[in-house]
Length: 219
Image: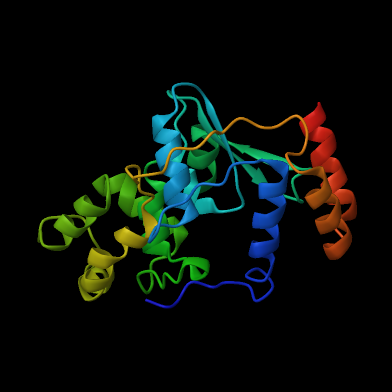
């Protein structure tokens, strides 16, 4: 598979974000060898009540679950305009359930995650295959079943992509069992270290974004 795309401007910002969060007293949590998606998936699975996940990463649509009250708030134009993503939205937009979104993304491909997809299988075809065969395992079982309703072209393409299909789920599917360190998720009403916050704001020109964050915490 291709490598995941990481914007050149992102990596230099991460240490600055870490410093600001520490100065504010806002918790960060992660685990070696796991992506943020997996941490979010694990925390979502542990949650006793409804969960709103604010993200621009469509991979997390697979966590949407109306029964548990798990929704995604997907930025359309920055965080000022958010699309509420629930199961009805995923079905209408992609023709699958939230749980089926991972299989759809795997078949269709997603360059941002380094997923080439199955050649010749676009989003609509992937949705039709999932509707007909249930899930990825069902589709691949159909490849080996001469009586299954697959076109010759689909059978050939899926058979040729078998190695990719066997490996890709590890990339696409969000983990739910990451061992996370203990942390306090409570948000502070005021900065833990006001002097450090002021120094970071001046050094990096944080301006309005930091003022909005401080105002939100106060409220």
